[in-house]
Length: 384
Image (cartoon, rainbow, N blue to C red):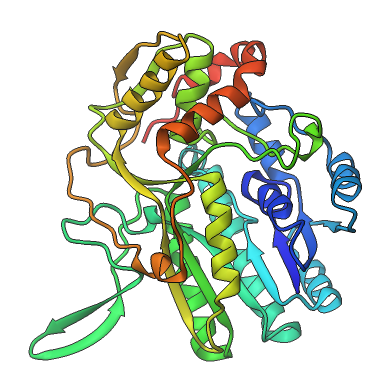
């Protein structure tokens, strides 16, 4: 099996390449290294040092004794993307090559336009390149649970049955995105559903919860160049990763607003397990399948308490402080999403949340000084 990972240099992309390294497949990768640039734009770095792509590939091939084929390029360039898909003829295309940050998309007019152009054009190019050169490939697009927003009803997996004026139909569940980034994901979902219906493509659209944790590959830290990145700034640091980095440097755990916001979460290793299950269970041609991918649902206050509790077990005393929410979001709300499709594929959580948080804290402990030097990026300055 040939697996093409778009955005292979990123947090999820590099983790997935390592996760599948011992499987009976060949990994191909494309990346423009935008993630490195975006984090630099935020005045930050990865908490855990990451190697150059050349060094990563050398370590990968030395460790796993298999070749990785990597192509540097921007998938918003159709000629480039089309030529690579034509050359590779992938069986699976995992699409991670997007800007994944709501705050980044809300910084300014130019950033909002850039994020939507980058995300939408890249996906449209993928649709047409797959139609032209690899029509049987299984497209796996990373969406987000944020597409749904926080409706006052249960959240199904993509579709729900509705009755209106005596007639029934199964329709896409309404999306209520809360940023230009999340809206780009909604538009992608609509475009991919249309492409499956009209071009005969097959796609699994993963509505993913907030991912946290670290993937170091086998024998980390002996093979440090196999480690993925871990961001902690206000734009690209997901909430648990940020809380853990704050704790390491004796910075208070900063909760936005009253902390009653409820979200869905998934450890990084479970994200990899889930994507493997999705790859093993492709949809039929013309089928657009939606998977809500998460392990647990927690309020932000619960997460802060969990991190503080793990820190206490490690003889680290941390405070939890609440600050004015820089985001316009509903803080007290109903939230009950379904993930039965994922369970039907065979997903079971790999471990409990506390152990995942402890493993993450232990992974970043050696980089306390590095995180402290960039601690100013923990303070939110992007407001909307």
